[in-house]
Amino acid sequence: MALVYILIFLLSLMFRSCQFQCVKEMVHGSEFSINVTTHIKVRPGDCIRIPYEITLENKKVRAEHTMIWFRGDPENTVSSRLVRNAERRTTGVFNMDGLPHGEYEFGIRLEWGCNQTFIFPTTIRVSVSGLIQPPFVLVPMLTEGKTSRLRCLADTLCSAPTRITWTGTAVRKEWPPFDRYDWRPHHRGFPLTPTADDHNTNVTCVAEYENNIVSEKTVTLIVKFAPRFLNGSQCVVKRELLVCSCISWGNPPPPITWPVDSLTDFSIKSHSKAEIVNSTLTFNAAEFYNTSIKCVSSNEVGQRKIEIKIQNYTETSKNSVNPNTWQPCTALPWVTAVSVCLNLVLLISLIICIHKWCKRSKEKNSKEEDTYMALNRAQIETEYSVISPRRR
Image (cartoon, rainbow, N blue to C red; front, side):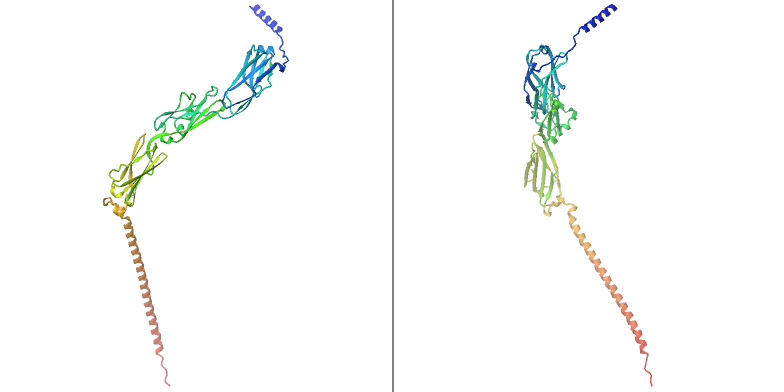
């Protein structure tokens, strides 16, 4: 057995010693030529096709070589292909996936034999510019509370996968961000259960391709929803009239009706703006004794009713107020007037009393001073009266 291993070892040494040394041969540019379009213009994402024709005069190269496509730097390989038994003149097409906006330069390098290399001096410039086709968004008729599917049809660029992303207020509340995608837009759709608040809001379909190529389409959602009453619906008494306003919002715009069969003299004025309907009912307050009135609004989606309470009913004139509906607050102005009058009378009386008291005090002080002056005068006159002249 050992003899066999020794024999194999000797044979391997003999084989190595008989091998030829790898020696590079001289390459002449005249042995290689290429015919190719030197400038190609495409849109972002479009497939790039570069047809070419190569002529090889070197038989060794035709026997077996590797064709390498590179971008910019010859060492930046894009694609490589092994070719055996090539014809002297061969044609082919180099296919490449879409590229984003920009200018690119490509070239061809051949490798064969003992590390032999040849780079064709002719290069191909590819200009990528313009816009790609935006996606096509299919939005069915949307109704509040009913689930529908939004579909986004985007171009498939060079058979590369397309990532569909949905953005918008209505989308954010339905799914977390990492779930809003669809790699097969023709077979699936985004499920959406709209509400009235989603009406007239925007959603955007974003198509993302390889090489950071993005295209998007924005649409406005139109949602049908039943009427709902807005703030501002009220009934107030204005002099002898009762004026009631009812405001309803819905899509389609919901007409408003007033069940006022018991009234004989009334007027109704209505106007609408967008999906909001405003209706005003006016009639004589003396003909109505209830504390509220009904307002009805309806469209093809549904019907809503509201009881509007009557406010400030006591502001009507005395002639139009029913005696049975009198309340204590109606006497408030009279009570206030009487109270003010009484306070004014008391204030005047107090001022008069103070004035009289001051006057009496002054008169009393004046009499006391007069008495004191009279006493002093009498004493002085007495002293001077006892002096009489002497006789001589």
